[in-house]
Each structure stands twice: as C-alpha cells, then as structure tokens.
Amino acid sequence: MHALTGSLRYAVDAGEVALDSVVLATCRRRKPDPNHVLVVRLDGNGDYILWLPAARALRERYPEGEYTIDLLANGAWADLARNEACFDRIIVVDRKRVLTAAHYRAGILRQIAGAGYGVVMHPTHSREFLRADLLVRASRAPVCIGSAGDNSNSTVSEIRYGARWY
Image (cartoon, rainbow, N blue to C red):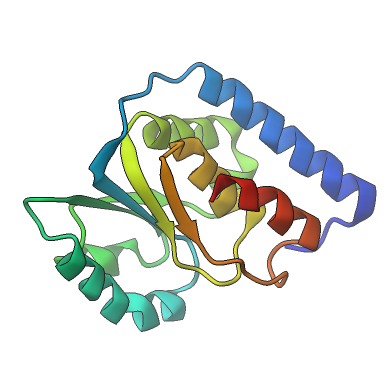
C-alpha cells in the first residue's frame, strides 16, 4: 500500500476523494435507518476468522428481526461469511478492482450510499484509506465507528483525514 510516496501519493488520494465525491453527489439516498447496520471488513482471511466470535456477538447485540446487518466483505473470504448466520446480506468487494476500476468502485459506492445505513462499523485496527475509509464515507451514516488505527496500511495524514468520517 505504501508503493506511492510523497506528492504522488497525495495526488492519488486527492483524485480518489474528488472522483468519489462526484459519484456520491449523484447518488439517491435513503433516510438513515438506525436499525440498518453495515460492517466493513476488507482485511485478510485470517483476520476474518479471528474476528468471527465478535461477529457472532454483534448479531446477539443486534438481533435478527429487529436489525439488519450487512457485511462489506473481502471477496477472498466472502464465501466463508455466507456460512455464518451473523449477516443478512453480504456485499462482496474485490480489493484490487475497487482501487483500479472506476466503474466498479462507483457501483460499490452507489450501493453503500443508497442503502440508508444508520450505523457503520469498521472493526479493523489498520485501516486502509483508499479502500475502507472512503467506503465508510460513502455511507454517510449518522453513526460511524472505527479504530484510531495505526499507519501500517495508510499514512499518518490519511489516517487523520479519514478520521473525519468516523
């Protein structure tokens, strides 16, 4: 993730934020539903498996029938998530395409923006600005919860900038 450095990285970040802003400005939005929850997990297989007990506890906290929980899932392990009763809907994200294919990214942004999430949770310590943080932003949910994180997947500046969406 740190392949780009300095001015080039900031230019790419600014370009992505600007393009996402254009897409989001044209999206139809539903009124946020406090009982509609989005969980953002785009990390690896092992991280997902280690997080499963927390996912089950989340379902207990937000019982089926009262709450709808959608999972924004890394395509590498989305099939595993389908075997769990924790989620009402799984939105599969291809980690590479969300960064490299503008049309694909716009579709994911529209899907998130139009869902009317009242709560978004991003329970990942090492947040990724260009992937997950910008997808959290798309939700415009009144309640967004995420870790302060570290800079192993994003620069300190990206973490600070992305923090405005939580």
